[in-house]
Each structure stands twice: as C-alpha cells, then as structure tokens.
Image (cartoon, rainbow, N blue to C red; front, side, top):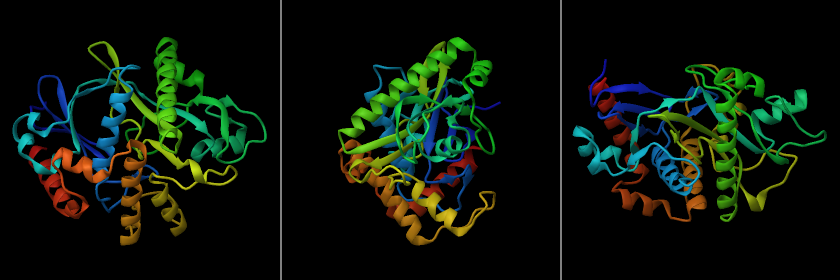
Length: 317
C-alpha cells in the first residue's frame, strides 16, 4: 500500500511516485540502458531531453490520441516535489493508466533487431517483407511489429497472431492503427527538420476507460533518428540516439549481460551531445532555451541532480 509522495516503481530510466488523486509523478533520470541493462554512468541532460521531446510530441499528436499528461510545471507538483529543483524539466505529472502489455513498435526502415530477423527469416515479427532488402532500406510501407513488455530482461518479438492472443483482436487492431498513425506523424514532422525516424516504440494504456498514450514518445530512447543528408542504405546509419553507446559497448566485446562496463568520459560526453542534438534537430529549438524555459541548468549539474534524485528515491521508498 502506498500513499501520496511514495516511490511506487523504479524503471530502467524513470522513477515513478504516487502523486495522489489518481495521478503519478514520472521522473526521467539521466540513467541510460542498453540491451535492457542499466549502465553505471549517467548521461548529462538525458532525462530533460526525453521529457522535452515527449512534451513536443504529446502536443503534436494530441489530435490522434489523448495522453497521460496533466502538467509539466514544477510549481504544480504536489507536496515536496514542487520544491525539488532537480525535477525541473525532467518530471511530468500524469494520469494513472493500466498499461497494455505490449510494446507498440512501428518500423519504416530495416534496422536493429528488425534487420536481424529479416536476414534469418525474410520477415519481421511475422510480417513478410520483399526479398533483396539491405540494411537500413526503407520499407514499402511502415509495419506494426509489437513485442512483449518484459519487467526484466529482453522484450521478445510477437507475430500478429501472438499479439492478438495476448490482447484480443479488437484492441490489437486499434493499437496497430494508432501506432502507425503516430509513426507517420513523427516521420513527416521530423523529415521537415532533416531527420529520418527509422522506427519508434510506444506505450498505450487505459485511463478510466480511455485508451491513451503514456510514458514517452518520439525520444532518442524510443526511436531511431537518422540524419537525412547522410542516409545511405546498405550500412548502419549515423544516429541521434543511444546507438552511439551501443556501438561502443559492442566494440568492447561485452556479452550484453550484467554487469556492464563503465563508460569512458568521452563516450558519456559524446552520448550527451547526441541527445541534445536530437532535441535541437527535431524541435528546431536550442536545448539551452528549453532549460531556461523550465527553470533548469545544464549538464554541469548532473552529479548534483543524480544525488538529489537518489536522495528523493531513498526518502520516499
């Protein structure tokens, strides 16, 4: 049993607190995970990039589906949260929702695990694709490729029949429709900014019977962003997401099982730059302007913010 202010969940990146009145406080920390393992080193400004981009896309997808956002203004947060500076720009007050037990994934290009599946079977999550495609190819049309939503370990790909068995045909069709519509919106808007959205992952849930978008949308953690002017099928693409740190980890020979290696300072800094660039390329707004707007300071305070968020988590557990 929890009460207002208490920590109710700690995910790979987000801490979730009871905010009373059927609400939660969702805090995006600077933790980073790769291959479903949380890495030991925080990435400066990462949590604020995720929050800022989610706000950007919540607003631009509101005509497609409702979302869980109640407020992003720290002054409106309940109790002690309103007075915690480390939450500025990285926390959202949201509606509680019963999350659908699927990760809703849309793919417009052949990359990552989708490319691996295609090489083995000629399909992705049971969706057959034309022969002869190469890595990073644009697909004839975007496809819906949901996965399991694992509490621990790796999410697993689901065929359409497996996903239908899990959530029912009616809900599956609605999730597919919404996921592809949101992906199309992200793709078109990002293309105007010279960014390709290769794929994206969404979570949806029910709040008082309404199906809504929850968690995050259109961020470097949930999407693959590629610079359009450097796009070249047949190879992996440069990206504005955590592929930078994934590539470094793979080069170390790490087996993708805990414990992960520590990240060198240059990899931490390079990853932080990729996240900030993603914000700026997608929104057209300098990231420093977002920080000023939300009353936050930049990554020089990462250690202080991390310590403050750790303290908050301990005190409210």
